[in-house]
Image 1: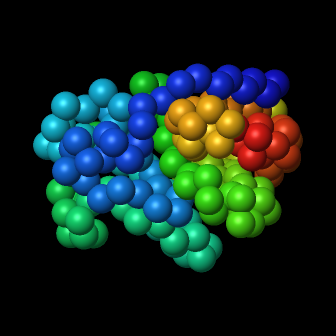
Image 2: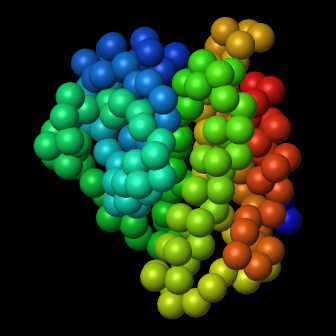
Length: 175
């Protein structure tokens, strides 16, 4: 089972300015309530977000975080993952990165697949099965409409990889 959905998202640059955050570049994991937060102090991440940011860095994907420094990043409220109420991460990708290197999307999605596979093993003490699903969002400025779009991925597992990532990568590139 694989499901994709496209929806509008807030102007990431304008919202970052409004919240007095860095304007993100590269690939950035956004706070869960970035789109609705009214102030910097209201922003929160799921606890998995910092691990995901570290996974991107470990794999050579650099991006600017919204926070002015890493010390500030850990001060943003981190809401502990309370399964099954877990909220999927929101990953912002600067469109210029994709235009300059379209293969970056596939690399990023492969990192996500490996990351979630490892999380299944560490949290559930087992490998994911074909009945398990994983969900995340990718946000990008749509070149065609100059509006920000959020692409939702929800898919099941086929062995050690998420199903349908190639198709989802094509969707993200075409946003």
